[in-house]
Amino acid sequence: MKIHFCGAAQTVTGSQHHLSVNGRSFLLDCGLFQGRRQEALEKNQKFPFNPASLDAVVLSHAHMDHSGNLPTLVKNGFKGPIYATPVTIELCSVMLRDSAHLQMHDIDFLNKIRRKQGLSPLKPLYTPEEAEAVLPLFKPMEYEHTFNVTQGVECTFSDAGHILGSAGITLEVNDRGRTLRVGFSGDIGRPHLPITRDPVILDDLDALIIETTYGGRTHGSFSDVEEELCQIIKDAMATGGKIIIPAFAIGRTQLIVFLLHKLFKEDRIPEVPIFVDSPLAVSATDIYRSHLDMLDRQAHRIFLSDNLDPFSFRRLTYVQDRDASKKLNDLTFPHIIISASGMCEGGRVLHHLRNSVDKQNTLLLFIGYAAQHTLARKIMDGAKHVKILGEDHEIRCKIHVMDNFSAHGDRHDILSYMRATPPEKLKNIFLVHGEQDQSNSLIDAIRSQGYPNVQYPQFDSICEI
Figure: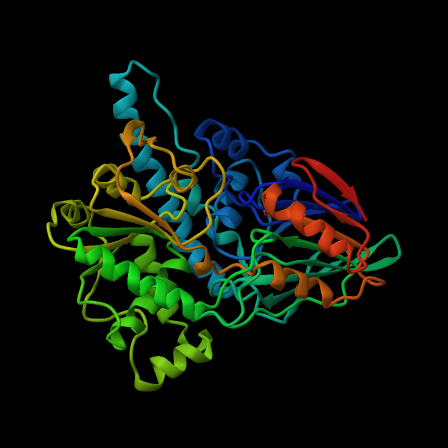
């Protein structure tokens, strides 16, 4: 059995792992690589394998860096089934359409600037029609139901606890007379986080492909997050400014809305208007509402037991219309805007940043991880000048980063995940979806616990097990 690491290899974006067994092959995830525009375009356009030769895709969850390049795969000849949980399929259906729409809109905007500069026009990675072509290929599979992926490979999804519908993947592989249990963690959820259930840890594995986004860090208590957020909001509102929160439309937006609702309910933050400005976030939140039975016990205790909607309250407005979005730039009173995308690589948040990063009474609040070379990461790292939609902007606003808000498990969670299978059984560990500073610090810790064969594969490398 061979594993070809085609994405999320020594980086946190573009999850894509090509597995070959018994003369057949399939893909674990097909995510968008996010980073420098030209590098991202080249990586997303080309696959280091023939898409038409794949038997199937097995999808861990709906986030763009795990599913967002499926339209390009289909455009290049893939015609097989895409296996995912039912909720992941619902979320992908709105996400892929939204991704294509945003690409068309952003390219149109960029091309207006390029025409003025005498540059040739750009094309989107994929069109709405190409995104639509993916949807008939989805095949829903419930948690803990075993199904056949291809010859000699059976698969089971388990709740990864990262976002609604996210899955850890167990593969039972019959390879040339050998039987192997191969695990793919997907994105590991963070235990005791609101909304999502705690992750199911895969065990009894011969090989494990595991994400290491926070492999070198330990999260603080989530109760500390609440206190920090309260103080940030109070301080920002006292200056009469606004807060812009870049947030992934799926998962992170619902979490911050849930938390703000809780803080309002407990009278811990002032009466400030809050706007969720993302059509995708609105659609995703509707999907979350249709699956309230899948939320964790905290959601039931705080809201559902009193028949309250966790994702709606008096000071919150969801914005879908583009004109209504533009009018937010004219508001003169203190307010909060939550807008996608979290890495500031597309979506309406770019237009809010374009209009506000040079204003000293604006606070830009980051509540998620940002990959290297993304706009969000550049601002987090202290850049004083950045390009937004092709134009130069000076950063004069206040910046605050809340690492503890992450829905990813931390170093302790990752090590606990691996310890579920003893070293004498787990012979191969592959660290993916993590930058070098996070993954390298984890390797020695894993080996010290008796797991000798730990690899941090490079992009386009092939490992055999």
